[in-house]
Length: 207
Image 1: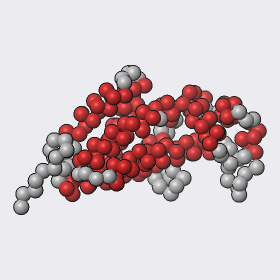
Image 2: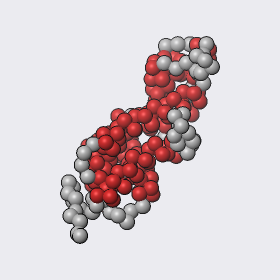
Image 3: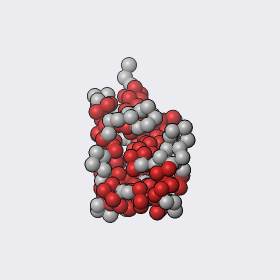
Image 4: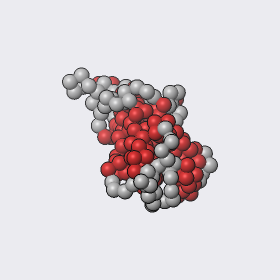
């Protein structure tokens, strides 16, 4: 039975779906496995209107919400644009680490979630959810002089998102680098090309 025509999903089923995707990847992501992991029958999921696509869409929305929550403090906190951008880059590494196995599973999807340009179920474009925080912080830094003015904020934000998520995921799962080493190496490589000065400083504007 569905609620007003919408599929009925609960935390147990969503957690089971994420577990199955993390363990088996997209090609072996089946409702039978999800039902087994959730401790319910396949028929129960069918009666609730739950399909593979419904579960996948819910996982995508959950991933976008986790990303937004992780980067929100950097967007709203104090400090220069450069300070908050560094905070956001570190937070991006941390959220990938937190959901490492799930993101590895999502990376097996034929059309990877991070490249989708469809609505994520909340009225936002999937790509915008991930790129917008970096763009805003770059623009804030350009406004206060702590980020290089010649950078194209939109292009650089897209580059940052892809470099951070994909490289962090690959180094952790493909090369077995430890989390701190991976994050530090990425940030040390990326930030010098973004900032106008050293860490924690904002250049004095000449009148």
